[in-house]
Length: 218
Length: 229
Image 1 (tube, chains in turn blue, purple):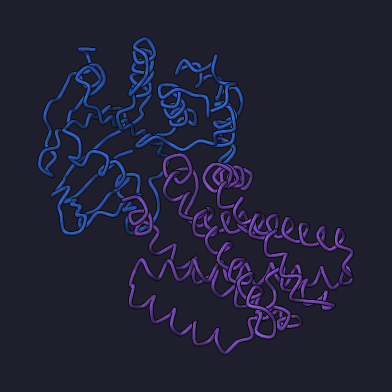
Image 2 (spheres, helix red, strand yellow; image 1 turned 180 degrees about the horizontal axis):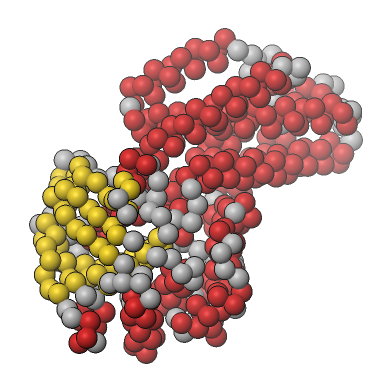
């Protein structure tokens, strides 16, 4: 899968947020988006998902323009803001009801995903009782569970304890090795250093390649 | 998918609209006091307490009830629709096509409307039994119930359609709203008047559902941006 953003710009009420963004993101890599708050990282992720329409430019998934097609990003899962789950269901039940929409996976895959994010022991607690970190883990689990080709994360490790962060980072590296396209927007230096192959810096509406890591370093 | 949407909407109502639903129930009980305005006219009172009478020949309370019912179902329709656009993009919309969601959501809204109406009819019928008022025949209650559902659903889809239009152009929305006000003022808002004309309401419901769908399909990103910023 290749995502191509061509001459993309986005304005809100005449105020430019992104200007002339040109990016090519390919399967098998982890890309990092860095920059201060409000620099347009989340906006770009939402444009890639198909939730926002660029003011100009196009978003191509394997050459197909999702803007013209008026559809959401194909085979993509994302954690952009805090996702909304059903408070009176348990963590497991929430994932099961989401999985039930496409019916691609069953109990086994959901349990494996919960294990990947260290949420197995809290899986049967109601979502309403979850801490910020547990909610974030469940958000990551809903991204991972259906084995999507593209995974987008915006500040994924907020509120999560260190040992789980290390575990999830390993999971993401393995997913990239399996050929997944992963984008991580983060302000944490360590996430970027450990995880990503290419770092894009957001500055004044412009997005520039900032750093390229060799995979062998990891 | 339907069960997921249903659970999500019920959770939203219980979490965010508790107070609204409570006030609505209190108001409903309070307005049953309108009985005093209908001495020996049990059937008229029955219609008024369900908001099926426009109150032109009766007390102003009947008209208030009509407005309360219409306002409630329209408010709930818009709240439920917008709440999903605001809170569910990553979890829901990346798993489902815009069309599937739209029609699934309409179906869930219809189920919730049915549930709300069953509760309302239950309260009114209970009141009639407790106060020993004479009840209309079961077939008459049933036909009123289905007509009520049909008209309520039509009004809900109409308000959604107007909301969609307003996202593109307030002027266009104003013009359409004005046309509807003129048309509505010429129509009889006593719901019973439409018994036997269900096909017309049904047809209009289908036309506006398709109109809303076509608008949503073309401009759903615009709606996302509008509600999420």
